Length: 302
Image 1 (cartoon, rainbow, N blue to C red):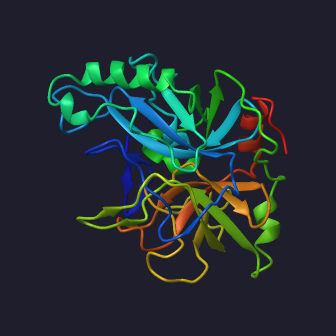
Image 2: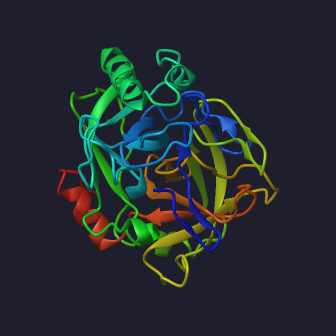
Image 3: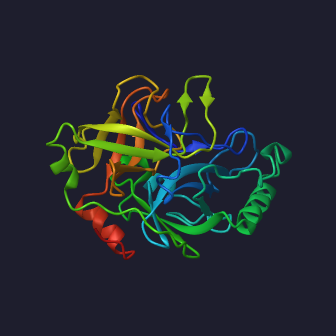
């Protein structure tokens, strides 16, 4: 499920070796500023966890609650999700989301107790623990109808529909059609990325700890990924331009890129340009006709 195209990499965090996920590279603590941004934990029955003799892996992403029951995230965080532990194709109900600033993974028995041939038992234990938790909310995943896992960056949007509604004083909001085209004219405009991804990544390092964080971003261009052209991806980089500071990384996938100071989600974090998360990142635009129509089918409009 994790696709590598040149140096473009989809950015969810595979939960190895223990159930953990990480935070935006050297960003700032969110401190309750975006309570409608949560961490996804999902099971993909066809993915490989190298510690086990049979398939099935758990990964994490980030998403934004747009209404009491609808979350927007990345398409690659929804495609291949299982249905009660079984393969379904585009998506299923083996996904949970937690809106805590620091989600509690201690409820999950360590994977090491199931290695190497009890992967199915791990699914049963973890899903039962998540279902019993009041902080983890089960949902059903739906990728964009044109999502292609082999070219994820073209339609990298996905939706979760929660089993039970969550009441909040405020939710995330969708952008108006073509909003980023307008905002790109103002070079001083800033954006805020929020997520639970790696604080630092390298060939032998993965640093961080399950905390919602934010970073100040600037829009570099709207040229799209791998020559796809405008209308798909927006390229963002940290405002201060320093390596490993204020960027996004694995586990931030699906997290929002807000217009700074607002709840408007212009894009969802889609990929990073290098394994160490040291360069720019790509946000999949939500201000395009097909994406707004997809979200409108779930009752969410700008």
